[in-house]
Image 1 (cartoon, one colour):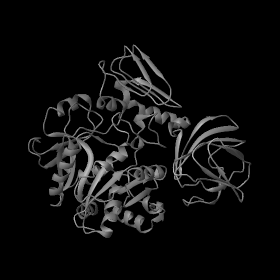
Image 2: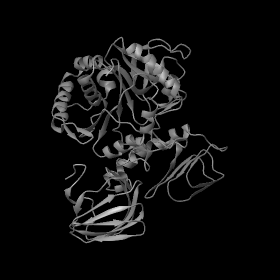
Image 3: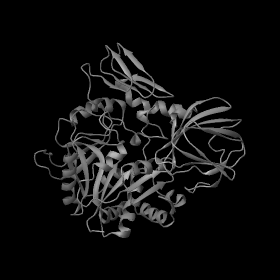
Length: 478
């Protein structure tokens, strides 16, 4: 491996609750295609915009257990083979994730650069972004801890700010020493800050040498570094993933890299970034980002709009008709509809917390569920029956399994399948079906070159996903 490699570190742990009901814990915003001008997810675009940067290498992914197959599948779709996908047993904020990445990067390389990125940012001017990263290399090579400050264009109260020691200039791109970090301000304070060229939005993106950041982490958070070292030494490999040791990782303090290092270090340098950045953290920010019609509306999907103004209206499934609406967000999904004032979009996070506390499954789970072999979506259900649409990737198989409390009926609607029932195998094509009695061993394989799509009808006293006894599994799930 060449020296001075740049290793992207992609942080994927967020749940994006302020973009509910589209973004949920089971399918968070980074894996969604939110903008009208891109079919790729935010996570995929994070990787794709790095392709032209010299000496860029395979990424390190920091992910959670629940979304691991979703992350792996989206990387496969864009032909990215990661250096490693680390599975955090629980969220510990950004500092432990960065420490793990630095330790991992130094195993096989001589002090590479780490480019730490969130997986859910949108950037319009990719070339300008790449030029700014290249400029940051100069400062990282001097041992500086570089962050990227976004040039603000309105008084945002949802971001932290960085105060620089001298005014920034967009005509002369230079790194500036950091004076201090400012927590999310109120509106009046934000209005003052954006008038002063000493203040930038805090993007949460970083660039540094692995050795430099470990030195600073050992200076300020040595116990955390030791816990991360122990977590790595006791980690286990699970196919394409590395499971971080839970007991060791639990010793890590839950803290952001900003609090742990950036607010203490004398090595902080900020580079102004003016590249059409948006973290799309709320429906209002997505509305602000998108192109609008003549009445300042953003309309996505199967929407009919009449005399609406300053609205974001999105349909995922059904026809949505809006008439005479002002300053509203309307988002329709298969199982939930959101309607709220566009200026109160930050409050959605509190609504999701209430949904979860009150036991609403819609607060956490999306109807579309990813598995290592593909995905499924529940189309309809009642107390003792359920109908699913199941997609299986070419060459993939579900586990050899049985259910103790339900029977299943598979109908092939697209593709070719091999159905195994006990020790017998049956070839199925479109419009053919097969019945799996309760308690009978079975497996389904996609034997074709394209995706296999089936409709599965379940019947029984209990239809939960945990009613599975596995005999064999290509993905190590038992």
